[in-house]
Length: 224
Image (cartoon, rainbow, N blue to C red; front, side, top):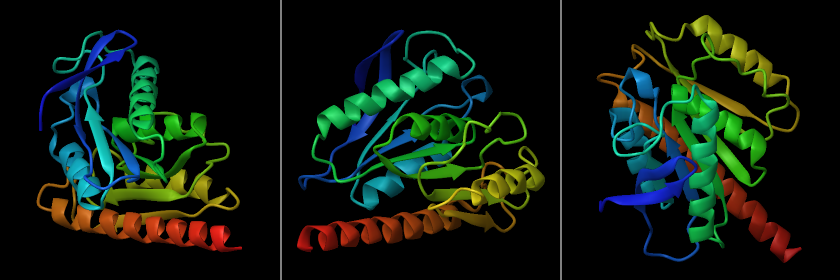
């Protein structure tokens, strides 16, 4: 995948973009884990998410937050990283103005940024949050969560306790007109060592099912 840079709020942002050969493909933005804990767009789960959405037929963009890799700027504790994500979403949508759907997927810190982004972008149709760090970051902004999505967690995750995921899911379950699907990956730690394949199969099944439902609903609306 060729190296590319996109103008960001604090300078250039290092990114990788995969465009599908067919026109009007849906789009997905992939967000990596914590920059100060070694997170970048090439970490295992981030790249696996990127590859999975490519295989599902999406135009997919992943990138390094400010201060990571060859992206300019400095870590900003979340606020600046959310601005980075919004800027890259703007770029992705400008590149694909006729995309039928927009998704966001993030791992750990990236899932926290992604869920903040979907609160600000009504065009986002779905999300995937892998191991959202509900024990260390505030998710109270989800009031209410505007779209359905998927939350995935490993049963042996020592970084994000199952109790914090349960609390987040209970909060999301109170929202009307959406469904948040929860998948527990048996035996998986926070980094899904030895369980990446199971994780991605679950995510691809979910996204494909949701996308097919959305496409069918759109066809019904056009026919009515």
